[in-house]
Amino acid sequence: MRKMCWLVCLFAGIMLVSTGCAPGPRVLTRQYPRLANIYLTNSLTDEQARALARYDLVVLGLENQHNNPKPLQLIRQTNPDCRLIAYVSTNEFPEGSYAKNEDAKGPWHDLRTRFRERHFLCAPNGEYASFWPGTKPYNFTLPEIADTLVNFVSEEFDWRIWNGVFWDNVWSDVSWYNNGQVDADLDGKPDNMTVFNSRWIYNLNRLMGLSRYRLGPERLVVANESLDNMGQWLINGRLFEGFPNTLGDRSAEGLEHLLDLYKKFSRDTCSPSLTIVHTEANPTDSTAVLFGLTFALLSDGYFAVDHGPNQSDIPGDTGWHDRLWWYDEYYQDIGLPLEDSYCQGSHVWTREFQKAVVIWNPNYFAIDAKFSLLDGSSIAVTVAQRTGLIYKKSLMPGSRQ
Image 1 (cartoon, helix red, strand yellow):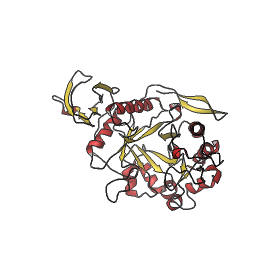
Image 2: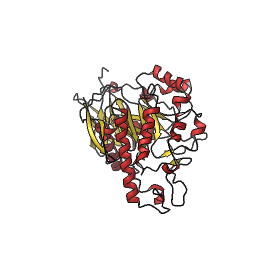
Image 3: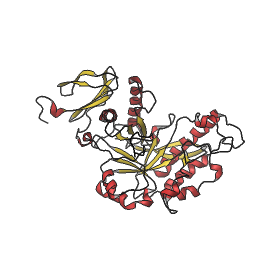
Image 4: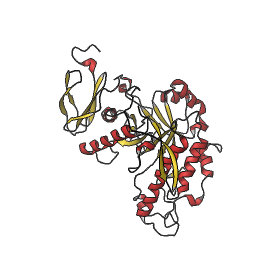
């Protein structure tokens, strides 16, 4: 089991004593598949709360601690093991929506009072250099942005409700930001993007270190994306959003590279590991859902599916993180993993569980494959292109399961 230890990290010219995790084997006890839901709404009914209680990990809008404390308590009562993580963006404030999503006593109103105009990022023309419509971007080249955000989370989160924080947009590179039209030093000229990028990433690293230091080892820290040059021991996991488009390379080789990153985060992050594989799909696209679910089962993360931030082609759908889809595969009891996943050749991966074998095929063609199991038996199956298969051992000839 991983041992918690005190590690010393240097951030922003000051010494921070930060709680981290030493690498070591994991004790796997939670049921598979592990399920997550990213549900970013400002309202929550009892019916929705009961549906969310079916998941192992739920990311929710922070305003719910003010708007909907009773439904959050209902999730806790229905499933005490469900981990609730509150969403906070690292790069922008929801200027256009926060007043609509909560009243003046809500947490976002508190956070807004902590920032001044100089804390927001402008373009050389004086306009805000916003990444997302309706938001004000933080000038993360300033170290006080990280201080302010961590102080807010530490002081204003209702820790009777939340298990941790979900930091959105923790990018490993921002040299692309606003096509280079940024003016962090307010001199009316475009910044040197190498310098801009270096300062931004440095302060994001500092944010992660401060989060672990201020929140301690018991609170969970999850990031959407993650800094390539940051020790994974600072956080509990990351979100791989929009599978299979997460890295932009949908080829079998590209998805195998994504699998390597996913397994690394599942292995090397702070325990408990809470890495999430999020698939963008339509609710009836079972092939895409199974493609993402079996990918997630190749390591020890959590699986989530919805339309994500991309607009849906279904009339009336928001195209956002606010779905409660449920699939038959979620009911399957496949037991605990008996081994790590491995490649059978031709980019086909497999992992054996106590009650099933998971097979994942990222190729653009079907695969006929034979797999040897740990007990000496074998199975021969055909796996369609760009999907996966959960083969129950109870279906094997002579099985007593």
